[in-house]
Image (cartoon, rainbow, N blue to C red; front, side):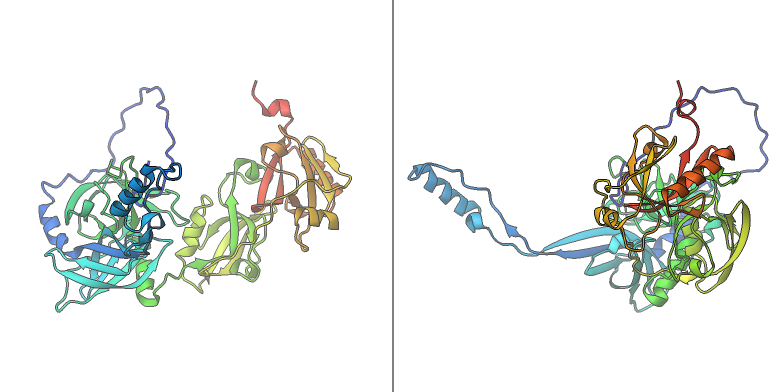
Length: 501
């Protein structure tokens, strides 16, 4: 399956279970009937939707013809092929300078201000050196770029005209419900203003396009060229910006995705004012809370976002958030899963002091954090790939498949471990064991066990035995791997009990 933006999406197959008889449920709400026609609404909205053409100059390339076949010296075919190549591929095998080429992209957009402010997708105009906006009456206007944001895939353009332009308004996407009627208007396949109707199929969709995925899904037909066009509710308000589709061929199969207007409004306002988006920032690295992690920490449900690193001097550091904390809520909004936290923080006002609740040492703790601004670029240090085990005398952790050793100067050289890295070195991992199943390997460093720092192999062994005596099913370790810090639960259940058979 492909996205309209040419991003590949993996779709899992779903097996159909045997249907079972269920009691008929009485309706509790009266659904709005379908309109007899969308014509009046479409006629009112079409003038506010525009077509966007962007062009890019591609660098000149050397025109390269096919090679002349090799013949014996003096063969009459040698001169024949040389003359043929000179006639049909001027410049010969060495080629000749080609003229720069122009690449063109077509998309959609909509006017949100009569002064000529146009909203579209960033991928519609990305890399363009010339942007043209075409109104419904085929008036062509040159556009300038006010600002764009790759993370949200939004861009704001400005066109100048001698009179006020027809515009449309943003609505409240939070009020849209699954099953509501919607209209999509855009420029599919460069055909010009086209109207399609459908319903809101789902909300809060994550299509793995970025950290702020929260798409509205619709079955209104959306095709290549609809990108950047509006999704309207029945009040004629923009509740989404059409951005992507699932498709095996590039055409609509009834699964389209729109950026919710409540997210887009904030970004658009910032692009108009600053030329770039300003997002809230907490300064933590997080990972998903799995059932094993929740069980090892005494947390009832596998929810929240687990802190796997804190940026020095960042908002989280100043709020005394610690490695191993599980963030359960932020600014009064529950954090049900890891991916919801970046979106909540990003939409929070910069400089605002907000409460957050974390799970720490078996209980909830409330902290106060002042939201910072997300830096434009985040530099992440990565460790080098581990080499062969260091020549030290390892100690084995019973039942986990681990052999451990202290971090010596030789080990730091062997594994390129930083001078300030603390913890216990893993020198060997046995396959088919809890450690092997979790992907641990020689060269990884155990930093904490059950949220307590360790500095020697004996520390790890002692803490593992303490957890075993408490009858927990897994022990939680903070491990520095080649990919960064990760909280990893290791099963303490005997191997025979872990494997079915």
